[in-house]
Structure formats: structure tokens, C-alpha cells
Length: 193
Image 1 (cartoon, rainbow, N blue to C red):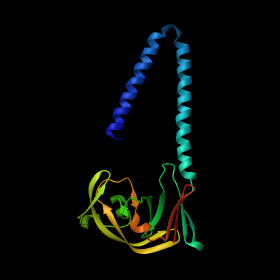
Image 2 (image 1 turned 90 degrees about the vertical axis):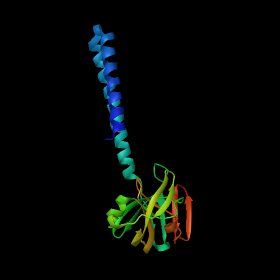
Image 3 (image 1 turned 60 degrees about the vertical axis):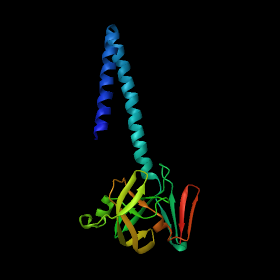
Image 4 (image 1 turned 30 degrees about the vertical axis):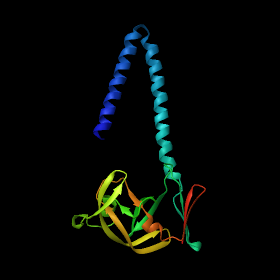
């Protein structure tokens, strides 16, 4: 939990205590009714919170992931709930989730994903510079020995490791350009080779 989350929780807790105190003072004669109504609202609010958390857990789990059609060299990637296209590629045998980003020139690995696929970050030299929405970041060039998207395999794919903070890795144009046809239709990103 970050400091920001802790401050928000403390403010909400204080507000809840203040409201409870105010209601008790205002309704001293009818405490039984007050507690019955409070219990009902807690039950309603709790049901909404639990229902929403179950909905988000199951909806993310039931959304279809990319589909491969090996006979015609086609990959279909459905648009996620967040509006982005997410693809999982096996890099050197390790599944790595990516956000498809046609605005990114390169395949951009986060430091965490680079470590997971066996890249030694301690010996990397971050001499490149990339301009991002959050400003400039340093990058280091790498080559990915084996990259698989469904049944499509590529070797020695150029990529960069971002030395800045990233939530995840980006699948940029240096990889997407390997496909003959890129199309967005019916909520799906279709890659054809």
C-alpha cells in the first residue's frame, strides 16, 4: 500500500467515524432503529463491493486471449476491457504479456520482464534515449533469441530494455512490421503473415 493509499484510507476512516458519531448524537433516543438502518446500509454497500470485485475478477478471466489460425498465418487479438490490445508472447520460452503499441518504434521490455527472460541487467549499458509520454528515458539494445506469438516464430528480434519505470512491456512496430497485414476490425487486432 502506497503512502497515497494510506492517506486516503485514513481520511475515509476519519470521515466514517465522524459520521457515525454525528448520527449517534443526533439519534440518541432511537439507537435501535439507527443501528438497524446502519447494518442494512453496510450490507448493501458490502454486497456491491463484493459483487464488483467478483465481476472484475471473472470478466478479466473470461475474456478470450489471442487466437492463432496456423493454416493462414493469422493472429487475432481481442480488445481488452481497458481499450488496449494485449498479447502474450513466449520470449526464450517465458510467457511475457505485452500491450500492443503502434506508437512505439521498438519492442520495449520493462526491467522486470527483461530479468524474467534471462537478461542480465547488471551488465547492461543504457546508452540509448527514448522519448516517452513521461519524458526521456535511457534504454539498452538487446536481441531476443526466440520470440513466439502463437504458432509464429521469429529469431533474433531487436528490442530495447527501458531503464525507467514501466507497468509492462510494449509490442512496438519493429515486431509488428514483420507481418504483411495489420487490421483492426470488430474489436480485434488481426495480424497476418
